[in-house]
Length: 222
Image 1 (cartoon, one colour):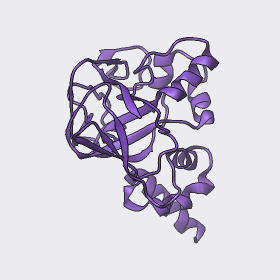
Image 2 (cartoon, rainbow, N blue to C red):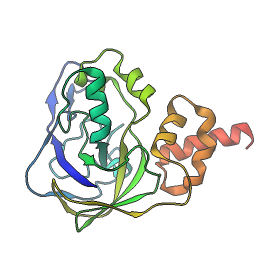
Image 3 (spheres, rainbow, N blue to C red):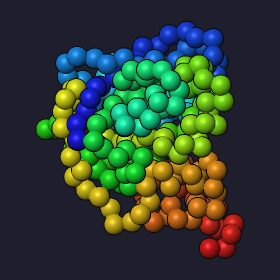
Image 4 (cartoon, rainbow, N blue to C red):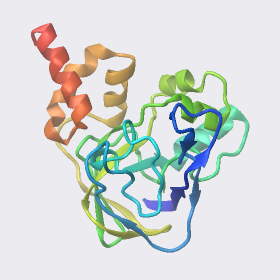
């Protein structure tokens, strides 16, 4: 298991973003050399956990619980075959393109040691948006991505440090529960009846998903 690439984006104006300011950092490109990773601060204030990476709509993106976004190269390869076009590392707006790691099958609260210094913790899956659809240029992309159910994972930074392409990734901790990124994604998008199952992940879960799960369980009397 390793990083194939570390990808950073710069803010640029595009016609398809839903950001009122008209800019997005979704077009991420692989970089050479080390990149500093640290907790960026609360959502709405903090941006990306990677130094030099632009997050342009802080209301929905970035912050401590979405500091880093990882996508499995294997899932991107499957999309390449379906779309009939190449997808470069970073094409999904991911910070980390991984190899040999079941990213969407990771458990909420699972911790990854990346290189010798950085420790990351899985919090939730990525929810597709109109900007993502415009960036890929594929019709009905949001629905198609959601239907596939392999969204990649957001992670929080537990221990900061530097990472670079080629670094090994080690699963340092795997929780006992069975709440995976894929399950969390289905629960908050297409199968709300799954929400109570997310409670097993506890505080490791992204706070917004945890709130949804608690509210649903209370309303259902479970």
